[in-house]
Length: 262
Image (tube, rainbow, N blue to C red):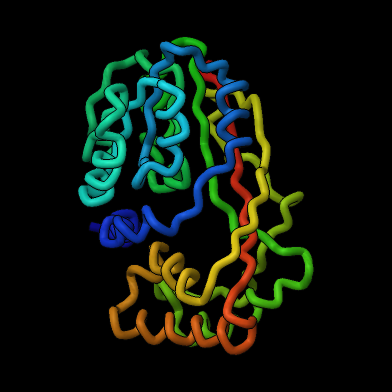
């Protein structure tokens, strides 16, 4: 198992926390997806990597038929319990690359903050084969963005990141992008035609403990040795409590890239 494969599986270790603390996707994003793709009452959707269902839930509530393929067994079990009352939602445990699905049977294939984990040779070829003629691929991303006011908290955390190197690395040149700098995800334009891109800014307030919980759902932190991770989290919490009055404003932008099958 290579390093990327190991990191891809790390989220499974924190399934309940992932469900509790990961940010949801804005209604505006979901509404834009439905409008651009022109989903109908009988549309059939395939989700790649639902996690515990942050992007599954708003579409399930609208009554669409959804098959969601989740690699992590613990994540899949949390999602399965969450959607047990939705007869049209099926959670399959397995790797998207390996799961056998009917060709040309889906109106929409989508993935929320998980598409980057799909192996390159399957990333566009398999969705293309699974989509009906005229079907769409939607890629939803979660981006950490600049507050455009100096990013004081971000820069205050960098000595801690440099000290502990979550994920085994540290980037001295890392900077958060502004919303205006975000771009659409690249797609294979031999197979798909890009039709839509938009970023949806979101600001969430976190206490020191809540922010540590959020960090505990990211693969670089999960992959740390337990003692090292505990020390890292304690220093982050101390920073929030001592320098930022016990809470911080975290700036995200959820991006939506939609492409139509050629």
